[in-house]
Image (cartoon, rainbow, N blue to C red; front, side, top):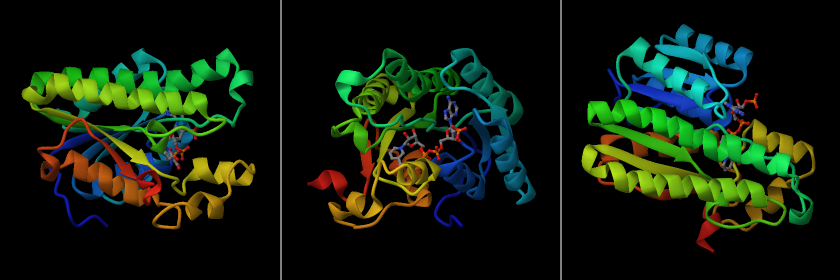
Length: 255
Ligand code: NAP
């Protein structure tokens, strides 16, 4: 249910679209009337997500895509435009959270994998979205950073480096494209109840009471609350907003 936005006739592209915040955003874009390209590495999950949305009467496309592979990202973005005719909005959301590691013990392989997906994946998606938006002369991009893009956290250096990097990409692209009709922003979710966080809770890496205790709003967030921020940043209501990293974190970063 998304009463606030009307994206009828517009086209959105979402990465990591078969789970958590990506799925919630893809659903919210579709419920607001947009046609949506759903890109995800998980073929069965993205096919099922697209089937559910199609069955609910929405216009969507399932795209199997590993965001760490620029060719696959380019193909997914291009196919969305070929299928639906344009690209108005994008949410570059796909990401992973590796297990916590003492910085002195982190392997180069793990560091590279986190950057390849969380940072290079956003870079590649933004690059190929901008090619279409630059030709159109309009567009709105939201990149997924994290509270980890704004603060540090012991054991999470590689993840936080990737999410700080997303904010650098966002600000620079915003400055480059603002005069060409394209806005670029980032959203910084706090601790959100998604399958990623479920896995951390199950593995004992995170305690939900402890995570929420230091926040002004003492609970985990929902994927739908992040989707609402993404839709607002993508909407004409945010027409004068570009280059920001918007915390949606229950007040975690206010302290
Ligand atoms: P999620 O439930 O794990 O969903 C992420 C989706 O991205 C999954 O469908 C996953 O597929 C897919 N994916 C993983 N690697 C990919 C790749 N290389 N190419 C394309 N798709 C890929 O996670 P989430 O919690 O919604 O997180 C979404 C984003 O928010 C991530 O960037 C995460 O870092 C960020 N974030 C999360 C939180 C939080 O508290 N949950 C907080 C701040 C920021 P598989 O399931 O098959 O891996």
